[in-house]
Length: 59
Image (cartoon, rainbow, N blue to C red; front, top):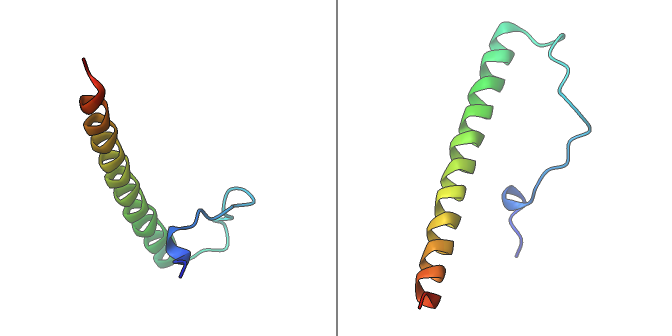
């Protein structure tokens, strides 16, 4: 019923990067970039929705 990918994840703070290898750091950056793209797409979708709703109620 619920998709865990859609629920916000709480974070205790910044991730400790010190023990991570170069490969792990590069993978982590790639994951963060994917999340940024996903988040920007959601912002775009919500702005479009808000603009569409606002246009209905304009006089």
